[in-house]
Amino acid sequence: ENTTLTGKMAAVGLQRKRLLRDEDMTKVEFETSEEVDVTPTFDTMGLREDLLRGIYAYGFEKPSAIQQRAIKQIIKGRDVIAQSQSGTGKTATFCVSVLQCLDIQVLLALGDYMNVQCHACIGGTNVGEDIRKLDYGQHVVSGTPGRVFDMIRRRSLRTRAIKMLVLDEADEMLNKGFKEQIYDVYRYLPPATQVVLISATLPHEILEMTNKFMTDPIRILVKRDELTLEGIKQFFVAVEREEWKFDTLCDLYDTLTITQAVIFCNTKRKVDWLTEKMREANFTVSSMHGDMPQKERESIMKEFRSGASRVLISTDVWARGLDVPQVSLIINYDLPNNRELYIHRIGRSGRYGRKGVAINFVKNDDIRILRDIEQYYSTQIDEMPMNVADLI
Image 1: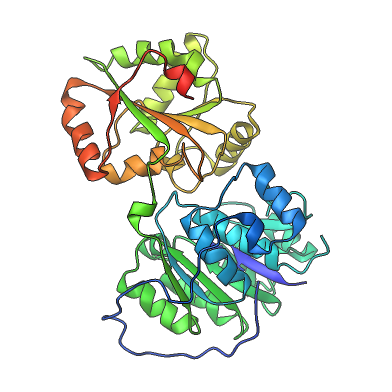
Image 2 (image 1 turned 90 degrees about the vertical axis):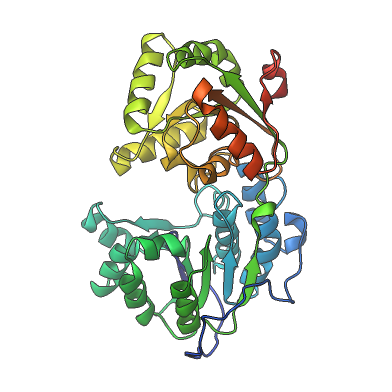
């Protein structure tokens, strides 16, 4: 079986000699390679029928900027460096590519129609379970570098059949000190392994890594202005004091449940407090933050994805890399602590050509932050109209 290593690290591809080059990378000006063309629809990407069914069933309508450029290059077997912010659809980019390249007759969710075996190797979970699943055989293995390397060292993850390595959020992994483990994993891979690296920023360390790991990589840069707020109607509700936010939220509850909504708070404590208060008032909500055990977060997300729960209260842990296409309303109960987070939060509500509404609760002393966000994104945030439910 061909195996693919994916996720925060990932693996499908082509036989090619790898050249190790150490030329000076400090002067590299990163721009998109000339041979990158744009494929405007999923139908014209030459994807297999069962995969296309999975893509449309998952709720995608048209490919995002990064998907229009990168999917075909990865399918061709090229090494690819893609620089792209969160919320641009980069995770789905490599998922679609991996699924297209797998050697099977006919990834979870997207791969529903393809009968794909996937397993996630993550630190802090049961090692025995990882060993059992890997021994059974998997098409795609995703995981954190430390645990993946551990599985390779124990010979549970056999690397000779790995065709593709995907490094997702590479800059985040380096920031978290995973550099050594990534190099350790790479040393065990066959020389012809195809490498796909996706990162929001490309610091020197990343370029150094691409230089060591990759052969003649295609470069794809999706600039920030393609990560758009287009299609998302943004509003604010003026609340004089913090305690008025809760009443405002209760008034909006019926509007929230038209589709699915995510409510963002800035702290875990606030998430817990708001969840409890909403439940006391007999509103059905679920909640999630970084202090919850992985298993609990996964089951909450599963419920939310399936539509079993419709309103999710969360910290910014939700604003990185989670796709729930049905979400068309975001409420910022608290305005984000930094303006970068704003697009991570609400960019999610209008993703991939879907429409969305974002409502910001703004106290008197938040007006300045709101204006700063407007200026930074060259956007307009109007006062919420009475008929907001009609816009969702």
